Amino acid sequence: MQPRYMLIKTAILDAIERGEMKPGSQVPSENQLAQQHNVSRMTARRALSEMVDDGILMRSQGIGTFVSDHRPMSSMLEIKSIRDEIEQRGHRYTNEILVLEIAPASADIAHRLAVDEGVEVYHSIIVHCENNLPVQYEDRWVNPAWIGDYLNKDFKAHTANYYLNQVAPLSQADHSVEAVIVEKDIANALLIKSKDPCLKITRRTFSRGSNSTAQPKVTNENSYGNSGAVVSHAVLYHPGSRYRLGGHLEF
Image (cartoon, rainbow, N blue to C red; front, side):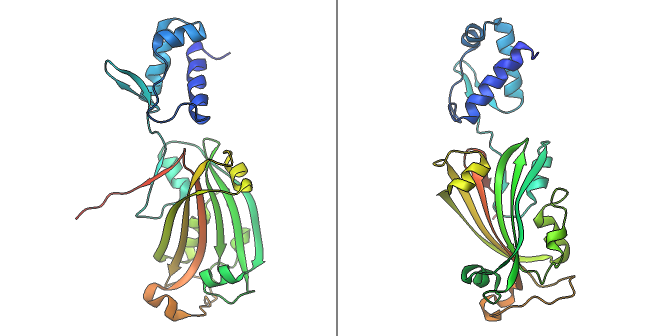
């Protein structure tokens, strides 16, 4: 049986996750929580204090306790493995592999990978989770000339980003970020409501050197100049309530 203060913490966390308490929302006072959960004020204080220590709540002297903006922040200025980001926060990383296949490149994917339309390329869809909660839906297309055994990689052990960097050192990337409402299947995979906003990151990575024996096929070298050949094209979806992007610039 859970200690009484843990029941209070769980109730507050559930309210935050459901969106009933948003960043900046004031949480009930110690007295109110004590009455709601039929516990002592000391028990309620312990629950709030631990959540403040965890960075989930923040106190404002003389005003009250509020929900902090506790969403993890990913850098806009560098490309990191989602697994590394999660584990660096001291949290547990897991994933669910939804798609791992060879598929013919559509006109759009062929253009993005700089290959001929209809060429067989690799396609993976993986949902990345932080403490069992989905934080990223990764839809990735890969030029097989860079990594012929992509489908045989252990994606439970390492991310696609990790494996690609092993064979095709990153030389350049372009990406865009926008706020979107996702399709129902993506919302279901992310465990969010169909109208919940998401951050959509569209990213294409390039490399000039490869450890693979095959040479990547580029159909229009002039399209990319000195950036190298395209390694992969990925579309990443993050629930807006669970993720944010930021960076630091020096001038």
